[in-house]
Length: 201
Image (cartoon, rainbow, N blue to C red; front, side):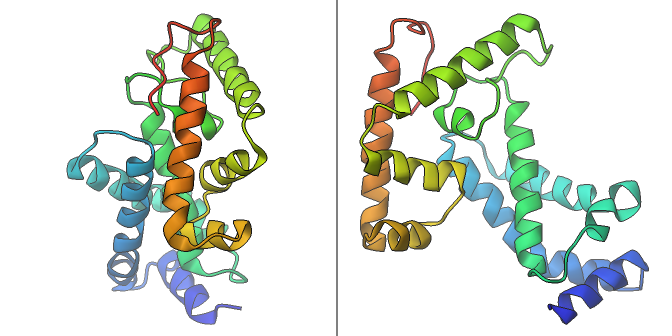
């Protein structure tokens, strides 16, 4: 039970003086760090202005609908962990709005391809085809490569957690991830059924 975290959330919901400033001061750095990490791993050329926009949006999300997300906080868990989850969600939503070439990690998070934003049937079909191609191609990799990719992209694990799970040193996780991404990227680009796709790995 995280009583201090619960007390802060209750203060926010009660709109007590100074509670919001304390909350932002305490968690703005964490949110920005989560956003920057996802930007880096997704290979996007996004700058500090984008980080600031997403960070601000996280706090807006927490205030929306009479603090709906704050009311869903479970004091059995750390508030920092809950805020980080919301930050990841906000970042992925932001990335889905970007009109860019197909980015491998975007597919690995189970999202549709970045389209024109019009939600056309053809775009949805293309997204399904690409997700299918991704999963089929991943299945052709070694079990070790599949695991490191899934742990990092699907499960959102950090290097330390991956190292412990796979029995690696923390310093070797980055190299293992890079090798696995390279193999997957080469395999995806060699597929004749989606040869017109610019897979960025």
